[in-house]
Image (cartoon, rainbow, N blue to C red):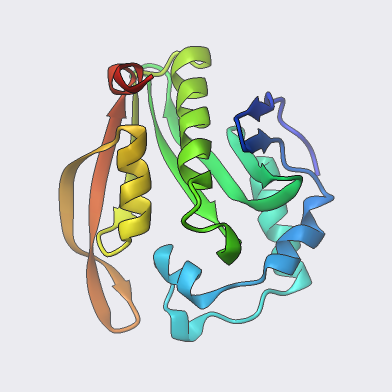
Amino acid sequence: MTQHNRPTLQGLRVVLRAPCADDVAARFALGNTPEIQAMFGADPSQVRPITQHAAEAWVQNQINETHSWIIEVDDHLIGSVRLHSVNHADQRANIAIGILDPNALGKGYGTEAMQLLAHHAFDTLGLHRLTCRVLAFNDRATAAYEKVGFVVEGRERESALIGKTRHDDLIMGLLSSDLEARS
């Protein structure tokens, strides 16, 4: 496992830190909650218990991503957040978040994590725009993105197949000026 150099981002309740090999046990302990996996687009009826190998692969993927952070609350891993498809020429990137601890849902931790990463993206990396995709039925995630300042910019109709049902994706965007207006 190798590390990319990334700063620790400290919020009021949330810490974003670099992933490390020690995270495997915490990721394994969180398991795979079908309801949470459904919010990521997985068919809940097909979700299986996490294996040690899958926990190791998840951590390795976080380590391999240049702009990925572990979300920690009270020294406990609750998920991860990352920037991907970073385009420095256009000053834009995509943002993705996954809260894996069912006990951490609905407490504002995801919102705070996204705020921290958005400030880092705009203030440190010099980006101008962040984009995300969210399943239209994922009201909790949509509300969290909106609290940060993201706005719905479009809808891809029936773009996700979960089980035997097609769902829409919302495309949401945040400009640096949107975040500044909220700060």
